[in-house]
Length: 137
Image (tube, rainbow, N blue to C red; front, side, top):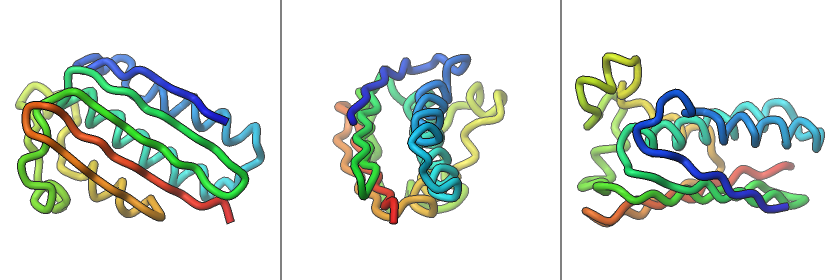
């Protein structure tokens, strides 16, 4: 099964829509609730990162019998230092984003914590691509 969701940069009123849709699908497929929770936490954090930092992005979800593979590809400023961005509490969020309750610097660490596999590639002034994998067994 494959699904694609568009994520609009800057639109916080829709942040979480894609991850909520994936949650519904995983529930319908009777996936273990613990795996659903881990997956949805990862996807929500990634989705909010696109909304907070990029112009736009896509969440590509592929669900097979043994795993969930999600690619989030955005068009945005990119991440200058991925190692630094992976540090708990590090954030480049604007004051406006922080006022809305986002940008605490926990997004990437939470994605890593709740994923069986995480791959990040980023190009300055082009965008960022995440691949998140969670195994169903």
